[in-house]
Image 1 (spheres, one colour):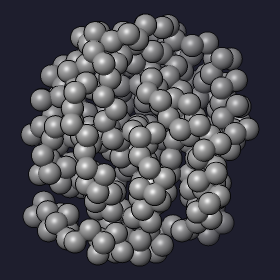
Image 2 (cartoon, one colour):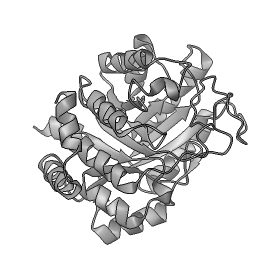
Image 3 (cartoon, rainbow, N blue to C red):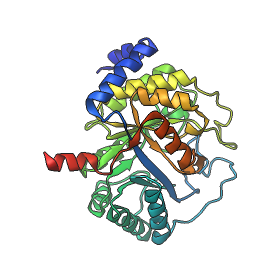
Length: 320
């Protein structure tokens, strides 16, 4: 769809939009499955980027303490714990502006091999990435790479000035060239306009190939960041974005990410109806609180949802 068509879709009555999104979802996915993911910060704090929402930026005066890159066995122990708790995708995040070749990156490659060797899908978010680095991650067994666009191109420099929108798109292109699935979404509630949310969804849906997963983050205001007093986004606007994302990207996993702890079970259920079919489970998302695993599984049981098996798409392709 072009931008004007996305704008018209976004402006439809909410319940009509949710109804259509539910139909699109059921045409492309098992309606009773939920992908369970766990995100671990493998290197926390000290990031030179100036993202106005982030507790890990050196430009923001937060209480977060800088930590060094975790050892491989520590990460793999957390991956086993996540697998035992029901997660099928394990995501590793490092607070780097970009990946530097050397011992740190070599250790990440070991982590990816270890996670993949457990039968879990392995995902990383490490900042900007060269094509050669993407190929090495692919060879190590990486399933997906997360690199969010965060917001629209026109609003981007209101949130981040230390890297450009074009640089984000370059990394996304490098991931695609390496044959790694792209995990790419945005953050809602940073003071952006409705037009910015529409533009973000338009850009995401026009990536080639489209993202395999689309995280929809709700801003979690962190004390000491410029956005600590940001006004909370209306929950129905969040639902609207999820429904539009599902319609525009029918094959993608639409993931409820940061901010879910403050969203009611009823609103989450409506989001699932609107096409969200993946959640992060575990105590934290990098550095922000997240619902406990037991709460998540109780909610899924109440709604009649079950965890999606790992590598489901790949196994279906092999069987065809």
